[in-house]
Image 1: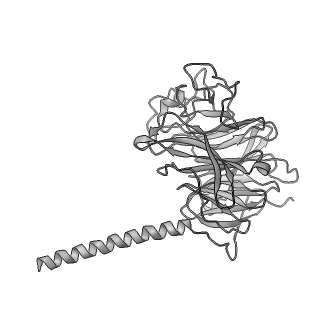
Image 2: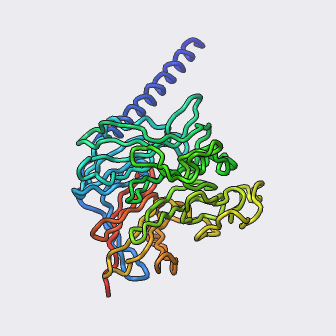
Length: 398
């Protein structure tokens, strides 16, 4: 009798193990499969200060999408944090994952992150990807690669940047990519929760990096020639930068970063300057205590934030809305907000922030990325296991 019970228990355990394995195989197969266009797009009517917005779910079923790039043919490239890059058609059809994407460290906040089109994409079909790159002993660090985009695969994949040293830990990789129109690429990253690394110039954690488009170091970077500093660094003292954009009106670099608990901030980083983390901050530790290293909100020799939120909306993604004089949104800056479940619109007068509006709040979605198309539509990604690509029509001019 005892033998029969044991045999039955073993059989049951085997069946459960086989079922779990099959579920894993099914999930992998589902992730690898293309997804057809929706038969009918879901449209939401959402109020705003300037009138009702039409929000269309262009595509859904994306697993924690992190970044979207707008393709010239009306389609999109979307990264999924587990390590997949997909094409999304203008009709919402989602491709199978593109082949030859770099290997990513998909744990915690790590994975496949930003995707942007090269400045000469129309001729070269080149793209840039940022991602958490695996290292020895379960370490990882932010990296950037370029590749040529094909119909269903990448080719000529080349890593042009890697954060050094690689560290153990699941969080704070950044990372966004932007071009200044002068032959340079800016790359944001996090300090990998090694707070004082942001202040150490021999490390790349917590730094905004500026490179030539091929990954080489510009001769006029602020720390070139110093033995105690990494030549790639543009500015330092940053925490976890998940927003970056170049103002098309002026060429000014804007970045936004997460504060610890409170103190999300926008900076306009300048060459060689120190933005304070973790010596100065408007936030506190998640435990509710003052951060041990912090000496207050200001200190000589450290730049104060250009704009700060005492209560963190958890910023991710940034895009300027300019060149649309007939729109009430003209001269705005959009930022995704994760914990706030909104799309933030900042009204600008030159560089001055003169107003703030939180859009999409009734939908309650975590907004991970935002981009603006040439025809004045706004595209956003929701961060979810069933993530969505949204198209947001600006309110009609009155």
